[in-house]
Length: 239
Image (tube, rainbow, N blue to C red; front, top):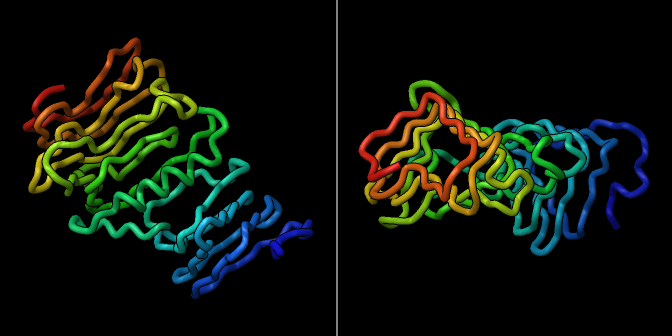
């Protein structure tokens, strides 16, 4: 059975170093605050979901593994890190899967655009070989001096980020801030695709450098309101 069933008191649970497997769907209730130490890793089994409804405190290092899913609910986790799934940001390793896992897990606690969490990217170079689906969570790196790079390491062409219109907020809400988006040996065609619907209201690209693409740095269907602030363009095929 779920080991947390029946736990009603407010408690803090410390997970030390080691790998902890979950072979059943497990819900950690909101009254349990979880702290995971360096080297601790929670591993839901294939087709199983580990749901955390309470607060989570952990370093920006891998804390999740296994083939199962991680779900956040209750709006208690405001910051999510790709490193929690094993992103290494060394410029050559493909971090696409780990970044998408962070985006997808953050999305599980989004009931509306007003409570979207932040995916926080550390200084370093995140290799992206497969295009990412940007949902409701804000994507925030470290600025200035291009401390955080998203580097295309896939085949020539393709799109690095595609904004999903079906998530809460759609293309009317979201923040991309504090990155250099750059091509590797093969040029990406489009860095950010915003063509799923008209851009409106609170979609913001801020403190971002677009560096080398064969087609569009930002591809639009059209816009009503769209804010770009402190943006730099270098060696791009178009806007």
